[in-house]
Image 1 (cartoon, rainbow, N blue to C red):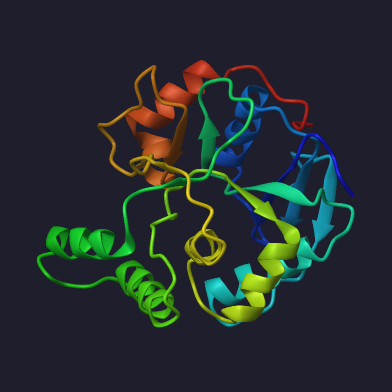
Image 2 (spheres, rainbow, N blue to C red; image 1 turned 180 degrees about the vertical axis):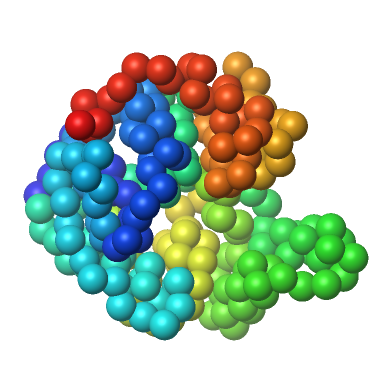
Length: 234
């Protein structure tokens, strides 16, 4: 199907229990022009999306479960041909007509940055970034860093090709953006994981950790700004 507006799709755990960030993420959707909101995976009795894609997520790792869920999403013909892929901790802070492709430098720079921050020690996250970077290099593809905690517009047909080409690999957004060479705007990551930092009025997007949303300045900022319930709250 085609539509002038795109669906919004949230991938949720099957047993989702904490919906604090999701509730406020949904409230910020008033800042975006979209078609319908889908939950793919789990659902909570306090929230009702426009559509629910119930999926028993399969796989031994997080990325295998994400890939399985993404494939189910992309094979669902009722979802618009292109859709905005959201996490439950993504927030839109200012009105936007659309969300362009956004990246933050390249993967090599990001891996080195994380290594410096941890005194040369690697983390599971940095190893996943490096694995993705190495595979992209092996295939002579770009290595831009699309892991920026901002919603990304996904073409269902193109996403299925990526899932087939990189079966089991992590960092889907990086794989998708570089495989299809979508380009975009170079923008710093908007993830705030510390308790003392908050976005300023110029920020269009922000993302949180569970702790920074619950206890930090960024969570206070979001809760104060978005007090009105959304139509998804029962």
